[in-house]
Length: 472
Image (cartoon, rainbow, N blue to C red; front, top):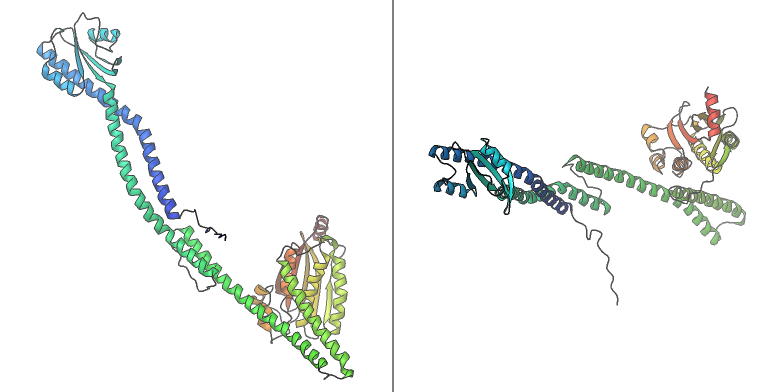
């Protein structure tokens, strides 16, 4: 028996808190290293300057002490002075007026200068390493020479760097808990947003987040609140849409089922069979239209929605549609007007889908138009666009109707029982077909007093030139 396990999607990922603490620690360590590397040469230079200044001062004091004591080249340095110099790791030498060799590390030209009466500050190299050298001429004609190894400077520099490093390390110890506290505080609203998103994914719509924290994190809370509100509206519309579609499906199905049972039970006489069959066929056609609209609406949001663009003369297409709808309107006692521009208007589009747009808009207008009213089908050109428009003098649209005109089932549910309504899918199909054809649909108030529906479709390059010529 083989057991399989699926890794948790967060496995191997670090939390923001952990990342922040590690980043804080890394920055502190990097700061310590950079501070050490940068400060060492600076501290060493400062230590060398200070050490040389101290050595120069001691050389001056030693010279003064020897001059006051009448010392000469053959007189050794006082023991107390030697002890004081040794405490600073300084070695003292006396050179006579006729000396030719200086102490270890001191060059002959430097010795000549000091014996010539000049104070000398120089450096030298001995078997034990580099030396700082300070030499002063004595009143007796000789010279006193003090030497101090460079290692003293290095020790002082290392001590200074060590003290700086200790301070930075203490800063590191403080930075880690501070970073942890800041990260926990920073991620608290993020965790709240995560929990809210999980509740929304589980179906809860009563989630409300209080924006807090930095601006970017507060924006996430605002975005989730807006998303939740949009989901509430969207799901409400979906429920209304499903209820309306269920109602529309149930009505013809009930009729078909009733007549089928009547035929099966022999209740309908032979003379009534043709009429009953016609009724069943009409209800079946109604069902077929509803199912077709549902399938088209679903395909418009899918990758398999089929469009075959070709070069189309929209003027001819709209004129052909006008012939059909003129007859339909006359049969219903509605006056039909066709507004066409002169000449051709070519667009690369799908003529079947454009005709579907026109038919849906015209049928919607005819449904709500009482006898004696008017319906207008128009085509005009605008820069880069061909504009197909259907207007009527029916009951019109309110501001909220215009905003929701192309949402599936919204107007159907809003006006069911108030005015003649269809399946609630026609205008939704128009809106999505217009987008699929590269254009867009708009709703508004018509000059005739009713509703106006406008669909803009992109023109081909040649048609754009013709449109510009018409505008001129």
